[in-house]
Structure formats: C-alpha cells, structure tokens
Image 1 (cartoon, rainbow, N blue to C red):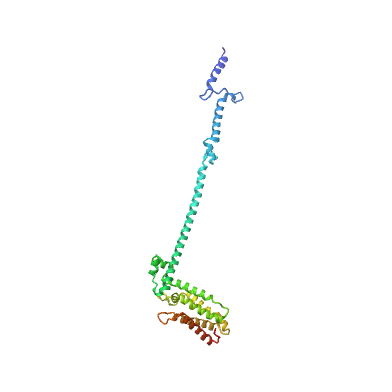
Image 2 (image 1 turned 30 degrees about the horizontal axis):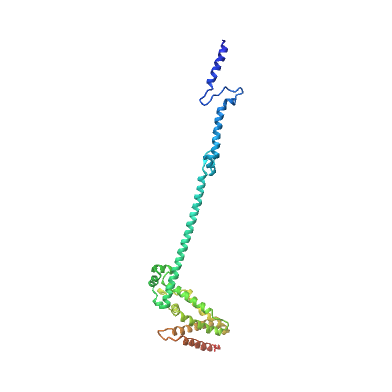
Length: 309
C-alpha cells in the first residue's frame, strides 16, 4: 500500500475516537460547516426535555403557584415574590388604619374627658346653687361643695379659677333668669307694664330670695372689683323700666329717664327685700304686693302719670 493510501486509512480509524464524548457521539463536521440534524438528535432531545419540564413547572408546578400568587420576573431573571409586596402594602394599610384608630381613640378620649369635665362643672354649680338657695350665701363653703361633688378642693379651683368664680357663675345664671322673666312682661300698655315688672320681680324674689340676695351681697376676695359683665346684666334688668317711662314721659331726656328707671327699680327691690326678710320685718306676700302697688301709684302720680287705678 502506498504512503497516501496508508494516510487515508489512518485518518478513517482516528475520526470516531476524536468525536466521541461521555454524553453523546458527534459525527464529523458537515461539509457546509453544520452538523447534520440526525447527528445531534441526542443533544436536541435533552434540550427539549429541559424546556418541557420548565414549561410544565410554569403551568402546574411551583412556578405556576408563584405566578398565580402574583409572582414577577425582573429583567435580570430573578424572581420577585409579589406576595411579599402584597403583604408589605397590606402592612402599610394596616398601619394607616392603626394610626387612624389611635387618632380616633384620642379624639374619643378627649371628648370623654370634656364630657366628664362638663358634668363635674355642672354638678359643682348645682351643689353651690342648692346651698345658697336653702341656707344663704354665708353658708357656702368650698370644702362642702367639693365633698358633695366627690372631688378635691383643687378640682373646684381648676374649674372656676377660685371660689369667687363659683359664686359669680351662680349669680350670672340668677340675673339672667330674672331678666328673662322680666322681659316676658307684656308691653302693650306702658303703665300696666311698670306694674307688671314690679309684680314679676316680687314673684321671682319670693321664689329665689337667697339666690337674688347673693347677687347683691357677694363681695369679692381681696376687695377686687365686681365683674363688669354682671354689673351690666343688672343694669340691663333695670333698663327694662326704661321703654315704658319713655312712652309715658316723651318730653324727658334720656339721662332723666335712666335715673328714674334705676330709682324705681331700687325702690321696688328695697321694699320687697325688706318685706321678705324673715328676721326683721317680714310682710305676708299679699300685703307686700299691695305695698309695692301703692308705692307705684304715689310715684307715678308725682310724675304726673295717671296710676293704674
């Protein structure tokens, strides 16, 4: 055999060993540089099996479960578990709900505190008013009020500033109630209105003698001035006699009318106050009413006004 023929035979025997691997046997290169499909059948089948397994996992396996739970795959190929994102969002919502609940609880607690404070304030006033009404202003003691209200003396001061604050609040309510009663007197006839104001004042005084006395008897601690608002309320009550007097005395100036209305009111107050004073010259209510009417008769006659009778 020639040298050329021996070389070709050696090449044929070496080709199978050169393309043999542990996974599969790969044939000689394709004449056009591509391997024949049949020659790569084993490797292609393995790759297809891997793709099929992945596809099955996506459809029914763990990957599908992740997909149904909202799984996301980012561009880098890593799995992003949207379940974590879902619960993170839920935690944010729950935190917001929790914060909202705390705020609502704080508002409710503040409301409850305010309601409790208001109830205690009303209770203190009711107790103080009751003591003044039944026993008089001199019998009112801050410790008695605090004990009856079930609170400390400090709580009374916290609500009203000082004990004067309690008395002044009761006095404000008294003069307000008095003014409302007087304002309800019919005003069609000015003469009848004056008599009606005096009679209504007598009735109110007889019903609330100690409360009305407290309005005039109370003295502020440390000689502090009496609050302007209460003084104004008293003047407003006196001023209810002003309109009928203006109608009865059209030629009188405002200064004279204002002075006259105060004088009339003060005189009626003095007669009623002394008449209802049981420790001195108590007068039966019916006789006291007659005395008030007789005073008005004489006073109006002196002003040139025809009395009611």
